[in-house]
Image: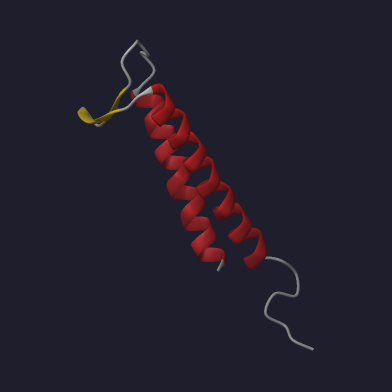
Length: 77
């Protein structure tokens, strides 16, 4: 479970980092560009909801990571 949490956190963090790095120019249009390719054009609401979704995925990964590395995990009395 901890491995899955690490993978989710790393993937979400990498995706967030790539989105920020490749879209710093801003502008009135919201075209998401990754590695020189236009992935999708989204509205303001779509950008907000995708940010919410990425935050939830990141939080779920952190939760899995903490749950998998908690003391006493897997020990039954």
